[in-house]
Image (cartoon, rainbow, N blue to C red; front, top):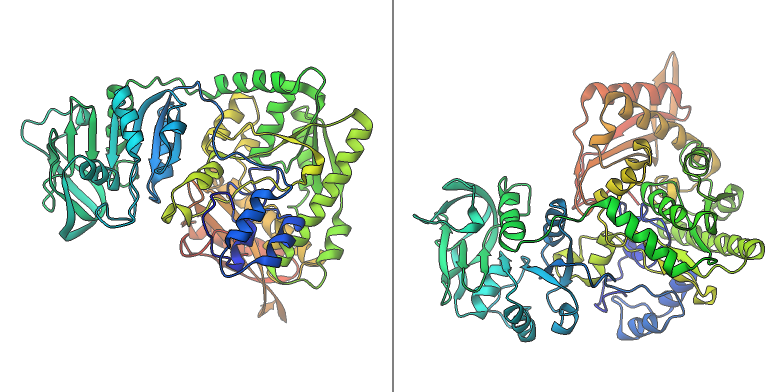
Length: 595
């Protein structure tokens, strides 16, 4: 819907369509709020993939629009052109880690769009295609002219290097051997390339390619090779262009960050001035100018890191004219609404009201077992309640013209990336969803930030570390961690088990090392023995993953003694569970959440 590209309508991905305000929901999980009105419109015409009719309808729908690009044109940037690599977002992260601002674009970006920005450097990402094949993506000729006219330094990575070589007369063809995994890269004798400044003569890098460069384009020279390929690094000093066959952006390339820094900072001269405290002050001034001295902003919050940071930013900008709404849907963690009210209203001075709607949600979920139906019910009911509260706030305080939305930069990346692997490894979108009849304009304070930058911003704003480093929590809450029917009894069982697991992770010092941790209550019962009696109760499963971007994740290797303590406590303290399992699946092929 966002990119204009067809997307397979798989039932487990309906929830990609629409979500609301809290970036902690979609940016870090596979589940978030879906909105009944647009879902109903779409399902009436849905076919095995989204047809042009569906896409046209989405373009013309009366829902709040979300732009697909960032708005700060004046800020100097490194532009990353994405050819569909699953690593493209990692390039952006590595550049941001240097405190250098960058943006990611589709490789099909026009010169008109790119030319609006002050470009410090351009990086071409990897991709799954072969540059010599028909239909392979290429940088537009006008973009190459723009780079030439401005003398912008350029670095091509993997497919990006092959694109560079292909365009300027080199020969790219299949290699006799494919090269995947770690490889020893050797600098050419006498090589003094500025790209490798400070690196040894040989170093380990991560390869992932079948094609390779057979002839170097005119004006370039080889500066490094491997036993399998003579030209894994090339350069044209006079034109300020470099190419790498390997991936310096992945963690498997130990010195990759050094190479990227050599290019971005030392060669391109990018300023390392992307600092969160400065960003906060800049945003506060922008919001004050946008909202004016009397305007009001409304937003839904969950208490997660994204909504907390966004809410504190708005509060610092306009005080009580920001109205936050927390909806307790009966599927939150144990005592969550009480804790969020204390943390955000009492400690952070956010103008926050809580709507207690547990009975309303649970009554609608009665008898529902399909996860998509759960999402639709919760999402639709949430919208109904949010609109009711918005009407109350407007009656009390006057018109609210603006909506706070917790879009993160990975959401933006998904909307602009070139189709390919990076379009299928999803960090799901915050994409509008409220009726345009509310006449709300979006304010997206986190739109330019990755998750780790949101946390850094939270600390800069003085938010406590416990709040800043909380794990993500899905919009539908425990409803999609209770496989099968959601009842008050089953919610209570899961709340207690989840609370024990999180407490033990804090006690053992593992919480901060884990990207996301939770318990799933399975629709399965097992036989057990407690004392002299036989039990026949529920099975639960603990899920802990380590990840930096939530696009991919590995199961966390939790020590056995911690598992043992969790199991003992859950089975003994939570009535209704007599067996605890541990999920050892990685993403992909599994997802982080179970539903």
